[in-house]
Image (cartoon, rainbow, N blue to C red):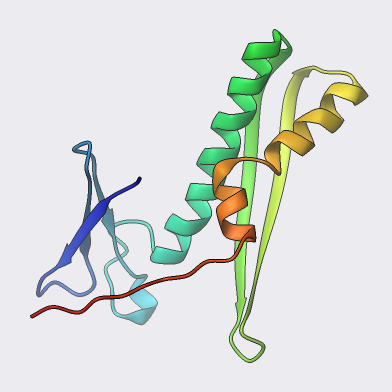
Length: 132
């Protein structure tokens, strides 16, 4: 289970994010909404999770199969339509290396099976507890 802690103090809107394994990230809002753009925005962090998971999943699969994958490049964009309460995530994957069409088709299926893709495309239930 992933466990993350986050804290924000007086500096608008700088948030320190800590993982249970000791890693630290800074998240912030763009200057256009009052932040200082010191780190990824929350939406960028969400898109980054999909990009990182997809990349690692494809790399692991190609390595396990011994395929000639040299590099994976990803572009992920996230568009929120608040009126329709709908979010669209667009993922563009570029695979560089010596892969035939059958391998490329399999890599697409593997990308769609990465753990974060499964989380985002499944039912999500967020339970929130408030303490003071």
